[in-house]
Image (cartoon, rainbow, N blue to C red; front, side, top):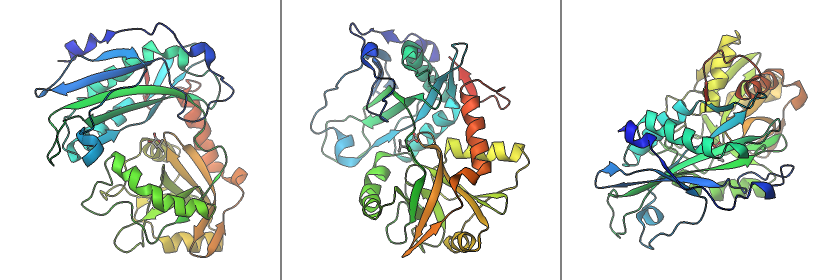
Length: 356
Ligand code: COI
């Protein structure tokens, strides 16, 4: 099967937009590279993948993903080393999560090896789109959606898998202010919180907008039952540093997305001998720690967000100010190390980077 997938049909663009890119102005997710990968699922099997010039796709009004939300996606990044090699960061982790999301959403699986190979092929074709600037990357967006033209509720029998890429800078250009959400719920036990499915993001928009109107960049989601435990933030997982210990909600619960960046942070911290606690984290302990000064740092961890320092946490009518972000030494050190690792500036001690 993989043998067939290795022969991706490539139709190169006849008018590259590369020359028109303003590399000093790369708004996140608005500039698209020249090509995209498309692979259909039909008759119970994946069909021949193709790399085509990036462009619009045409879909039937009854396309089932639009109506019933069978739609999942991933996000990962590629960087170029000083020597010009291209590195993709931990695509195996995204491939595994894509499989988990597919299973939960009743969609066909793309085997890990095949997923990685398709990502690799597209990045190879558009490698000139990888920004050469520090802090910038090529964001890779694989996604899968149901394409049956049918108004009835059942798993689709046909699907479209696609990948496109975007040269990007930081998702957040400044430290973020987050608000602990105690009314709205992102995910509940037995739901789809662990899946990277489109509806989770659609459902978060209204609550996030309420928070944004109060000056917060994002919410910190709490558990759907008691709103007592911290889960994750809107676009990233969340990590705290309390008295020198890295504390983060454990991913045991099926309500939390298993973040690749968060996992990397935990593995790096452990390898450096920093104490790490992955466990249930109560809102109360974070509020207490912020008030008594033992909360030294808080940050978001995500592919798009990378390591996003948190400056303020809103809790009910209070604003909990964290120490100035320049003093967040653990997260700064982890961010620098991760950036260097992705750009091939330090030895890949964990074997996380795939060379294209
Ligand atoms: C990512 O970090 O890749 C995500 O999917 C989050 C999205 C807000 C861009």
